[in-house]
Amino acid sequence: MFFIYQIRTLTHKVTPCNDLSCPLCGSKAGLELAILQKYAWFLMPMWPEGKFGVAYCGSCQQKIPNVKWTDELEERYYQLKKQTKTPLNLWRGLFINPLLLAAFIGVIAGTVYILAQGNKRNQIENKVLLSEYIAAPKAGDLYRVAVLVTEPTPSYNYTYFRYMNISGDTLFVEKLKTGLPTYGSWDQLNTTEPNAFDGKKIPLSHSVFKKNQDFLIMGEETIHIFFKGVDRAGQTLVKN
Ligand SMILES: [Zn+2]
Image (tube, helix red, strand yellow):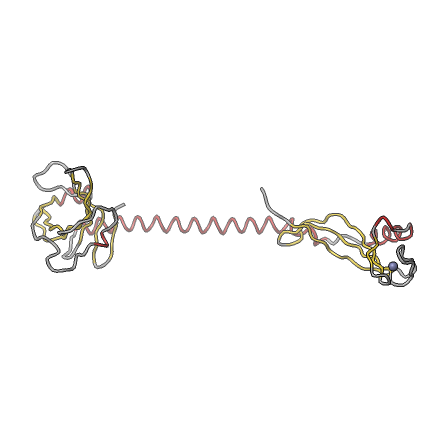
């Protein structure tokens, strides 16, 4: 696994060392020694790294470079460093972060699962509803169709059939006068204007429609009009 963490610095304490003289200006007032510690940080401290010291003189207002440290200063540093315990909470991320990660993965997985279940349920409901609509047509039902046109070159014409009536196994529909050559363009077709449909009764086999969800014209043997969905009361059920 890969993640990015930062290195941060914790200042444990700053100790005045007025008994020591500054290696830079010689003053005995104002020398202080800070004990610091680096630690890895990701959302919170994860693990501690090395401690180190910074010496600063308030008189000459300079940080004293390590190479300039006197033996006394160095000795004082080791002494203070030894007294400074690494706090346990610098380790806490190492224990808590895996739990956070597990919780995060759990939430993501749970959400994905719920969405997938919802989607599956919708698909099943849609399928059931579509079968019901086909089995019991209602006045005003509009069937989205793709008509295979062979001349001059094979292509599809996307248009609507409107349910007229049913007699025995024959389902009568009329065709919209207009059509479009682009898939999914049904919404652009005007089905509401007067005389939008041609009024010529097309006899379709209801049993084939129910069984295959495609249109077979009575007396024909091959299907060349494909059912793509139904619009009823402003809602569309798409055949998957
Ligand atoms: Zn100084």
